[in-house]
Structure formats: structure tokens, C-alpha cells
Length: 324
Image 1 (cartoon, rainbow, N blue to C red):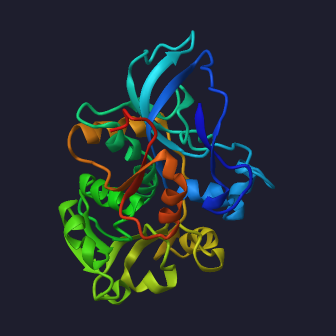
Image 2: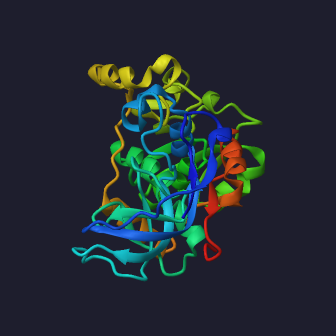
Image 3: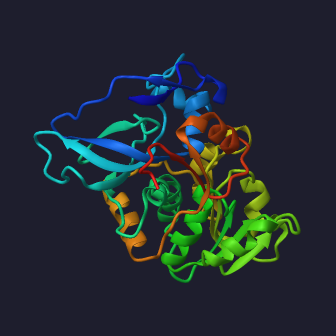
């Protein structure tokens, strides 16, 4: 089968499309013909082996798993002897967080892994980005106990995580103030944001308003800059480690003082979370934003675009002709 292979850490130039052995389904595994995948921040981190904290999982000196791609959507081609939850022909989507493998024509995943059937009305291209952005967004929202009656500010509302978080926070009942660039204001309004701040016209850190939660979905702010925006018991969260890797340490220290605090929860996706995203998608309450779609032959261009940090929502890879 064809697969995108990276044998060393680096930028998109280290990626090559090669012929590799087609995987086989184990007793409790699904063999999936991949129709669509994504390129996201998670993939870019493991492509470069940065930050260094990923190296214990991805390999210290070279990639342990040489086919990237943590999100996928495809068709079950075969099932292991002990599989009971899925059958051949099922349309499925999912997230292979540490093993990756979806930038290839075939991949495998445990039937008890982060995989679910594709929402009825979704194409493969629409289903592929259902997990990564939603996972990191929902995990943080849940850790902060975002719910009805709360005010949340989401910085970086146009990324995969941010655009998912706007929709999920609204589902949870919160009032959402979203920060984005000028051209995406209408998009973020369409996702349900109650108020949209154009960062090119206004510095959100100077708002005369306070929030229960400030969630930086792009990691470009800091607790120090956002502290004044928090209510007395307010929570600051970021998808990045922060200046001088301060966020994990602040998450340990700030709760001791009983006031404004930093949360830096360690993400953990479960199959029930994937089922939850499917449920919301089926109900029309969550739909990932898709920016660009690249054929697998243009995988380097896709990574190059994502690495610019300028994408809106998700970048999808069409792996097969049936991937639409």
C-alpha cells in the first residue's frame, strides 16, 4: 500500500510517499481502508519531535512509528476473529493518538479504541476531523467544568481546537466570547459565539470584562496577560506550555491561593468521548470546520500550510478517490 513515511524528525521535506506492507487486523482489531485523514498540530509536533516532551512516546532519536496521521475516516475492510462491535463495510472515524498511521491507504485500530461509526449525513472528508480538535477542546472545557450560566473567552477561535470549542461551549450552555481575525468573524458568529473580538482591531487582554474561564486555544497569550480578565475564582487554560514552560508549574501553584488559577490537565481521550462527538454531529450540534483539502500526493504542501499556523479549522487529506 501507499503511505506517507518519515524516517527522521524534521520539516515537511522529510516526508516521502512509499510502498509499505499492508497491515493486518489482530483478533480485536479493525482493518480500515482510509478514505480521508487530517494534518493537525498533533501531527506536526510528532513530525518535528517537538516539544521534546513528545520524544518518550514518539522515539528519542528517530520516529518510533514512521507513518503519521492521528485522525481518519474510512471503511472497515476486515475484522479480527474476536471483533463484535463492528463489521465489514461499516463507515468509521477515529483517533489513533500514539500509534498514528492514517496517512496511508490502510490502518488498524482496536474495536475498543477511539473509533465510532460515521454520522449518517457526513462524508468521509467531513468525518475525518471529528476528533482531534474536539478532543482537546472538550477535555479542557470539561476540566474547567464549563456549563450553563458561565462566561468563557476563547482565544484562537478559528483553529481546529478553537472552532470546536466554540460549538462545544455553546452546547454546554456557556456564553462565549471568541477571538479571531477579521476575515473569520462571520464564520465564528455562525458557530454560535455570542460575541466576537477581531484581534486585528482590538487587544482582547484589554477588555473591560471578566470571565469565568479564559481558554487560549492557540497558546499565544499567558496567565499574566489574562489574569485581569478572570473573575475572582476564574480559570485560565492554554493548549501550550506557555512562556518558559510556566503553565504546568502555575497549575500546581495557583490553586493553593484560592483565587484565580491555571489549569493544565493532561489529555486523555476515551471511546465514550468519540461516541459523544458522533452524537452531537448526528444532532447537528457540532460540525468541524474544513479549510483546505489536499490529495495525499500533496502531503508536504498540507504540512507546510498547517505549520504556518494560519489555517482555519481543519486541513483534510483525501487518501482515496472515494474519500469525498
